[in-house]
Image (cartoon, rainbow, N blue to C red; front, top):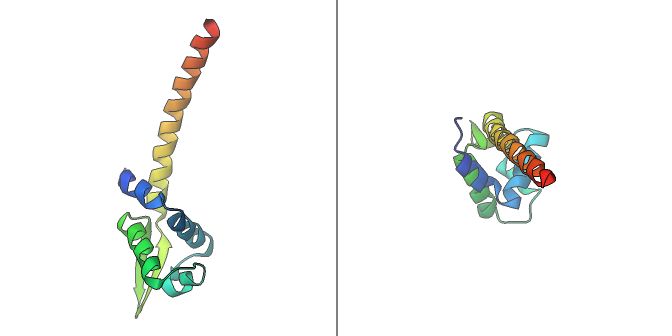
Length: 105
């Protein structure tokens, strides 16, 4: 796994950042100015959230002249989804074993 899952989870722990990811996933690449129209916060606040997501590699950036476009990094989201999936199957097996033992008693 190439993504730092701790950094990804920390970045996605904030509801505003999850909303940013959802918006970008649904609409495709956007500039900070285009994203700002959807949020009631200062540009500095929005930029801080975008920076956290980019640092965790949840978002990538592409500079086009003076504009920077943000987009979701699907590889990182896929890594996080696989991490959750692997844990879920382990938890499912453990819970099934516990259920069997409780039903035997």
